[in-house]
Amino acid sequence: MSGSPKISKTEAERASRDAAARFRDAAAADGLVDVAIATMPSPVGELLVAVTGRGLAAIAFDDDYRDELLERIAAELSPRIVATARQTDATRHELEEYFSGARERFDLRLDRRLMHPFAKQVLAATARVPFGQVSTYGKIATTIGHPTAARAVGAALGSNPIPIVVPCHRIIGAGGKLTGYAGGLQRKEYLLELEGSIAPRLDSGPWTSTS
Amino acid sequence: MEDLAGDRARAGVRAWLDATSEAAPRRGAAAALREALVERVRAALPPFEAFLEANRTTVFRYLVAAVGREHADDVFQETFLAALRAYPRCTEVARLDRWILRIASRKAIDHHRRTARGPIPVAEPPEVPAEPAGRDDGRAVAAVAELPPRQRDAVTYRHVLGLSVAEAAELMGCSPQTVRANAYQGLKSLKGRV
Image (cartoon, rainbow over all chains, first blue to last red; front, side):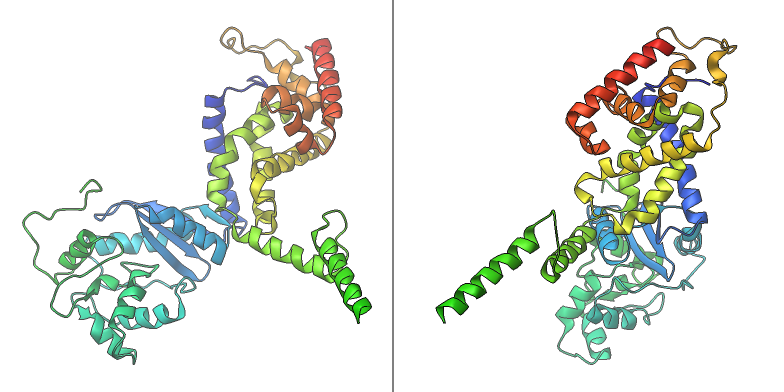
């Protein structure tokens, strides 16, 4: 037997990190994880994905909103949120393909429980705008039968819990201005350039979190 | 009419007392209030992942003292798996650190019940290169782990995790005096053994 009852904090930190990794695997194997989360690098910064038994529930950019989102998931879906790779594999794989230009459509099941009823309608219409095309807030409002609700459509898009996969970046202002994006206009611009919807600007490269 | 109003007021006060009495929630109103509180508390549970990250080191340190370094990892798994199972029903959001240590303590007791009390394997001289000077050898771990459960917890909470007497008392569900007595007895028999 090795060690002392007063294991040093540093040693306990290291040993418990390994133990926690084993625990996450065991929890996933036992079916105790209601929401699996994982992070992945991407050209628009690190992404956090959250997957439930029903499908992909959320994608978050690397910003202040992330912790808030996890707390919301804990309250509205389940607090049994564990960082585990296995349930998030398909999502991460398809996102990688999308960013490398090898995928134009996502074939992922979605968990829409984080969408408010109105947002669900708006985002369903948004999901029908194909890769490489754009639509406007007004057109989406008309599609869902509320032609005067362009502003409400904007708010609903801003609340999209599954950006990129539910392509709210494809909705722009009537005059062609990008207008707004929950993840920041630079990310919206990057995604539309990737899809070939707008001409790339000279100074726009991969996203850097410091920009 | 006045009497009726008085009765109503008294009934109201009774209901309020029932509803606010922690000791004996007896009636519907109390149950409803408790339910509402549980609901609110439940809504505020942090993501389990954040809870795990915040508490894993302390739990590991506790378990090294309670069951020894070589079993700490396994009992750690049991502790957090039990916690994850119970997590959505947990109402102790304000003191999740205490909650997880209580689970760890129960799992440590289970571990000792399972393990046949054979000879302490570390009584033989260690053949591995000596640990850096000043470190205790395995005998101390084994000795703490072999203490009766309450003494073991008192010693671990007070002298390994450095909790206050009041904190240890809350965790163990006993009086500060009992904590002091158990920690004292525990240390005394440790001195005899190591």
